[in-house]
Image (tube, rainbow, N blue to C red):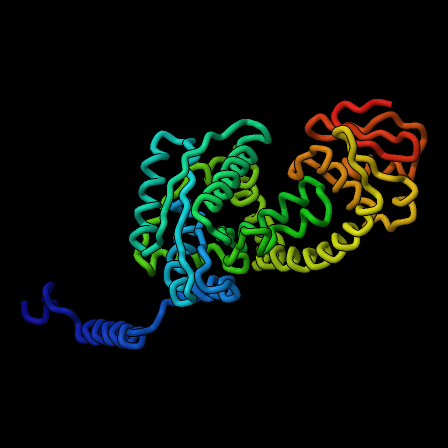
Length: 362
């Protein structure tokens, strides 16, 4: 019919709009040519800052699970390490907790090899039960990383913990009541371990993987609410963000950094006091009450915590409440018997000392 619209024809305005949109996309593509994706650049910058002080020839290993964070770390390390004269490899720990864990581990290892990392090693481990599922897996993983570093002659092992992981760690420490050191979160460097991504958001590592064409593996345990960290990630942090506004993760990570600086200074002072206050004999640790009484609480509790750790307590199980009870043997003595601590360790006051060890009695 004359004047009726043609179903196959496009209105002039619509055609012009589509042409304009296409031109805008083309212009964006042209502008992006030769430019590095910001997420990749951020990841590389973080790794470069961590590796820059290492001597040439140093062997660096990336702990890679095949997940988003560790794949982004592997890619950034593979790019940056050769430029600094470093040898970069990877270790994939197979926890054996899923039916296809060996396939997942080999896939992660192959991606690391494709990135140019060498050597790349898969290390199967047996996860025990002590410390709960999270603690047991962590213990097995760190033991495997240490053994791999020894075997391959690596001076540095890179871990892919992000700013989001740091925020979760602070909240977990707050919930346990483990004191200032726990609230200080994870350190950027401890021994051979380095964490380049502690100031990098998890969203950035995900974007870096997409931009690099990497295919991360999604660990189903990361969605399992039986794990405390998963509940913090998916339930606690979103509630805090909703109640307090955006920026909670960044604020928690920043707080951890500030507390770590204070904790490091206090730890140095406490270490000096511990040299004179602590003694070790026959499987027991003795803390001299006369020395501890004159110290500020911040120093005294650190010395007592060190004593408990040396006696056999595990750091992840030792809370500020435990240490406060032991401190009361020094500052609020009323004839208490012993204090029960994790891993079957006891603390008692006897003959001018706080004595810590397995099954000690008065």
